[in-house]
Length: 211
Image 1 (cartoon, rainbow, N blue to C red):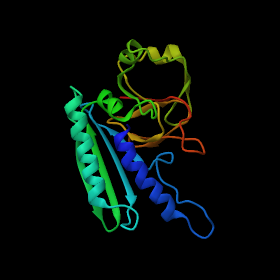
Image 2: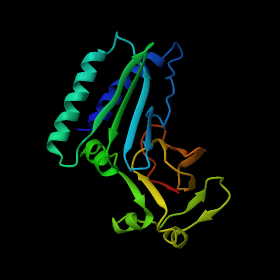
Image 3: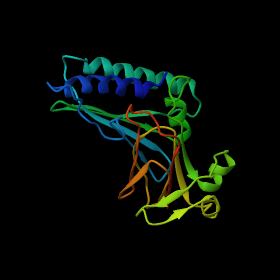
């Protein structure tokens, strides 16, 4: 079960309900429709944060928090490299912010990926990604959108960092973004938008090279 996604998914369903007006349109959220932001810290740990409007008529804040804390505890007890923590679960003026920290991209992937959901994430050097079986037979564009590079150029930067995601979201890395892959928009200050399709689904595999 995709635990954090279950919590955020419940909140986003309610957000859609709250965002529907007489016209029937739904309020837009950040990060390719997910409302979540993922940050990669210098030590390789991952923080995923979602801030969304929260109204008591739809969900009970205490119940959601208890469910999330229980699921984190269960995961940590069953996964050797666990150590997932809930850093923030706060409701301020009707805005609920949920922040979960993972010690690595591998733990993030294990926590958030199952047969029904795929939020697999890789973060390491290009050489490590290649050793892990990731393909770089792709085209990437520099952050300014002025220069394209291919496989040979990418593999020549083996010591540079790469983030590879299977799901759309807003991401922030701990360095300067050099190149982005297809359906990724560099936003400046280490941020990028991994775009989703009209249904909020992934548009393939997302790549970001940074240093």
